[in-house]
Image 1 (cartoon, rainbow, N blue to C red):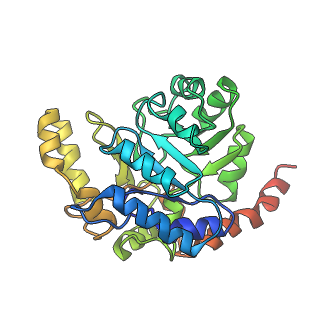
Image 2 (image 1 turned 45 degrees about the vertical axis):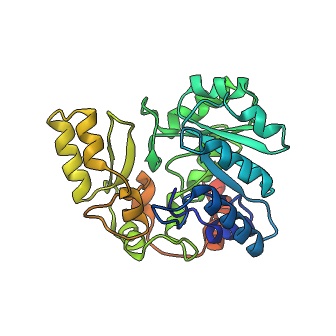
Image 3 (image 1 turned 90 degrees about the vertical axis):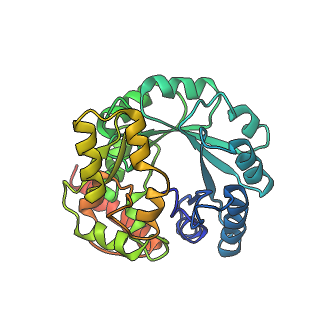
Length: 298
């Protein structure tokens, strides 16, 4: 949700009792400054809620140190890190009194994150949208193994959108869940209407994983993914794939609603989403329906 995890959505999620997360790229032009944009997004979220919220910072992105410093200076209490070595900045962040949650896709990475002192671990299965782990472990398999391997709290992510998924995550040993795709189809999300409508129409097989040579990513099926998979099937080199993908495709899909030239990161759970509601309703529906799910297990 790098281009659409904005202040409006983060504030709404936090106001409803969750922990909203902001991306440095949210709503930004391709030529924009992520550091300044992050500061503006944080300040806007603070004007919308007095509840805690966090930021999501992939460690391998440019300006990561400046982004971390901006988040700390703006008073963020939680930073979620991913796509990189937690050894790089975990101690630095925690010395500022900020909690660190790190996203992993394997037991090995979970153990490494724990050793580096993170406060909690997000175990993200292969059902998730966006960039994924190379080992292709699904949530049902990954979460309990991570729970057994570490002593830190574990948050389950990937393929969760309702009370059934929430209860299942708890049964696997997780302390909570992280959701992305379900929040795209909300009133507060700044995703293009085309993206939201596409979610409502997609089937259970409407997402696909591409770019396994470069780094697997789950997206909505589109003309672009068809071309990309054809290139991969014909043995295109890494350089050819990078040249084809270029830059700005994720922004084009998420913010401009262009599914011919753009890509839309989306989890496999998309086929379950049938309506556009508020972030408060998303969280409220989960809370309200947990007793019903539990009653079926008795």
